[in-house]
Amino acid sequence: MANAQIGNLAVSSVNASFALSPVVYLVTLRNVGGTTCHINLNGAATTSHFPLDAGESIELGLSTTSSVQAITASGTTTLDVIGVEQW
View 1 (cartoon, one colour):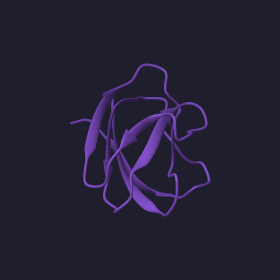
View 2 (cartoon, helix red, strand yellow; view 1 turned 30 degrees about the horizontal axis):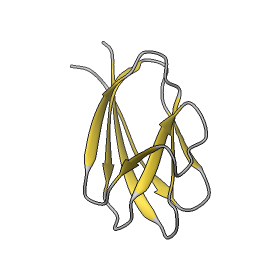
View 3 (cartoon, helix red, strand yellow; view 1 turned 30 degrees about the vertical axis):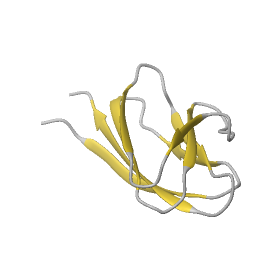
View 4 (cartoon, helix red, strand yellow; view 1 turned 60 degrees about the horizontal axis):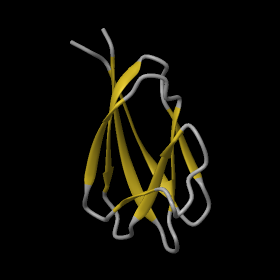
């Protein structure tokens, strides 16, 4: 069975970052708060990056991603992060 890296990211109008293990190859991001956040991989997020609305999730296959970055236009939300490591 593969190991998982699990955590959450408190997201606000200031860029927030969640570091991923180098062996994570698949990550699920779930916005469990009430505010849309914008996500980016490996670099600072801005409000022009991919929007993840409240209550939505996305699953991404990764190759060389070291972090998930997120930001809101205003307000706060929480982003659940579940990374699956290769075995």
